[in-house]
Image (cartoon, rainbow, N blue to C red; front, side, top):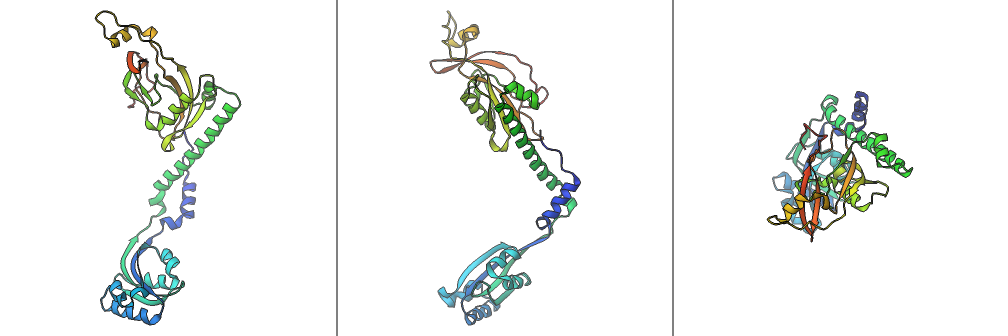
Length: 311
């Protein structure tokens, strides 16, 4: 779910407000020396204009010259560290030209060489339209998700249960097979909840079936999940194998007495617009344990609501 798609008017308004982002731009890389007196600065400038690098030209000044490289700065950026006069000169000169001495607004005299010029053509509204639409869509989706989160929390605070909240807010409900605390199914090795759902699994193990459902924040900006254990199976002793049976085969032949310690989590997830809940495997096995070892029991086949989609 998410917010409505941005309109052309909203896209145009964003472009106008952020015109500096889409306007043509120019950055420059400079090497420079800053000294405290004009005479020393002039000597450095003369040597640099004869072909010496700024560093070599400033070497006779020793520690009295502060050398630095200014990399990929805009005119505004350079003005903030060197002053407007230096920025005007640096951005008026062609690549390779030495400027100065120029007295800095912040003290000292500057001699600099334009080492590189980069120009970006900028983007028209039509050129920027798709990326602006994507950003505005993301913002709208986030706002809509936060609004839905608040509605769900209000419903839970008002005493509504998991099913009532899901029905009222029209949220998709997914019931997992029995899973362990790390999101895996002991009896179905192919099943594994995504890492982004780890907070939902943790919430499922933190609450009991009689507790109010928990709203978990999913990883990587994936939205929220309302979590409630649909079923909790307590661990039970394993059946003893009969003649000729392995322990695993005994488990398969006596499923009524096997149960696992993992809750089945009923998860309702608020997904970002354009995304869909993952289609995990659709077998619903019971999980089993004995002396700390996992034992599989037969899987009951279950129709997937994700039929036809890859999971």
